[in-house]
Image 1 (cartoon, rainbow, N blue to C red):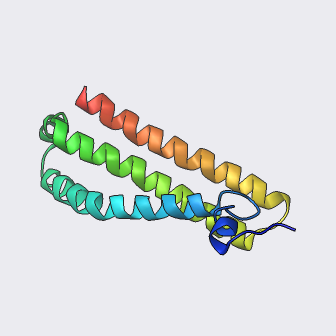
Image 2: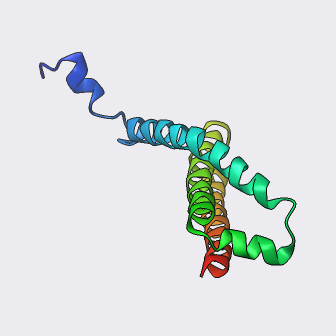
Length: 123
């Protein structure tokens, strides 16, 4: 018989060994998005009325490009975590694994496409 405190049992992270860390990552990405989304809206809002050439010059500047890239990366990371929890809660069997793999590939592909597009503009 083991003599373990509640704290020691809780730090075992449950049966999958990742639930607490996943929850912590979702909280951290949420806090990051609280700061990034207003910055993105502010920088993107300035570019809305511009023509194509002016927008290229605007996003070639470091601050708007970095804010957009960080928002894309953190946003899709948060999306991936949220949709994964949704799938784990409501889908069972082989479909669960297939949807999680598909959603992960989709979120990474969308984030990579956004970062690539902004990198092409900024560089």
